[in-house]
Length: 631
Image (tube, rainbow, N blue to C red; front, side, top):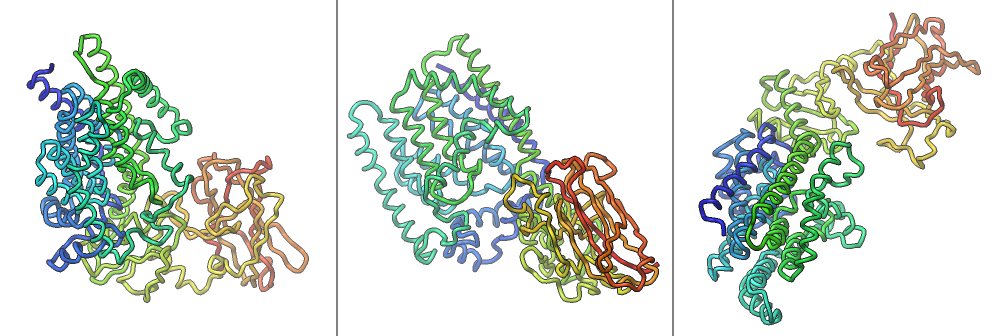
């Protein structure tokens, strides 16, 4: 039996490990999901009434989450991301202690410590502790744990209050009455399981009744539809075996393994090797000691996860926060009896492997996860704008021109990122990718600022585009792209693809491309594509163009510029771009003499051909500038 003093020391050591593991994210900026709360603060009594009587713009009903953020966290930390990270981490530490206290009601002290370590040190907690992104998750879990513990101690009223509050923080709390039953069954386990189950249901029936009132209220608040009808909405119910199979990631994440670890970089293979002894040891003990108590812990995991299994929403690691308490319960059940020195050494080695696996996950998540990526993009964009414009005029409009990047609106929370940090409610942000039109006065209004977004940066192009629009002397080909004749040689098509792997489904398309810190509106062509522009050549003119490969891998592409007059076609210039050559990774600007065709009408052709080796690849040729101007 471990003494109380040793228990406290071990718990403190566990919390210290969690601080070390999950503090790296404290240096990160807000991401799109944490900006969501910043831009939806409650500011009046009417706002509070509205959030309690209607669902939000994501069809969620989490009114207490908004109240906590608006009247507790935001007044304390404002727009300081560090405070957001610290609150999330402190709540996770609190939840680890509460998990230990709950497990101590059901297991030995040693088992409770082991289970709380599995819960507290698991890699999914990188996302929970990241910042306010998962505010509803880390604030509703302590109430869930307090409700379960109160129920075990026969404190029915207290359990009912805690359960009621959880329903106002996150819809997944609907599983709490079922978890209460499982806890009672676990504690009362033994012979006569039928009697134990009936007794557990009788004790939890008031909470099921409360759950029924909650569902009726939700039907009223959501106009009779608990789930959105829109099949693209993440909360849309999507039944089917294929949809269920897509949730396989939950199993790998629960085992502290990366998803598709067999496809990722070599260093990630270290994680499965670190986890293998733990999984083998735990699995063998599970098979030897398999009983209904362990099965109940696994059943907890499935029950807590069940609301997500029915939805279209893609699996995300934070969904496992409550389910992991069930696996912690099952893991703690395996820890029984006294702990001789040999057993302590083995447990220490397994714990070290688990911690190291989580540390490697954290390193990978800091570099590649969607939250850290979103933070870097948002912070960089805000810095770019503020460096160029420390102050913006009232009523300013930031227009982000169309690109081919995904989730552009999410990165900037629909543009609220800029109005928040400029503290200007009159500041508007419009998005070409969302279908917003170019603002009136874009060519001259000093309150309109134009940008291209090319991952991971936002580039201002106001002066550049206004100069192009004001240039009436040059013949610009990019604006005439829709009028060009497009041809494709099927012999150069990648035989492994049935369709063109492009944003438009065509072998040529427009998009902004950045090289060396300079972004340009560009034309991208696949090998085998020829674009023909009907032109009349001005006197003493040259063709200005800039070229670069789109990707920095592959075998290279050949570009040709040709002029056709009647039936005669002349090659003006031919070039090879090798993406593996560092010089090809910058804009290569050319000027081609057209004076010999002065005053003539003809066809200017831009042709992209496969690399000289004739190998199919992902190569794309980027054309920019494309202006015919007089000297």
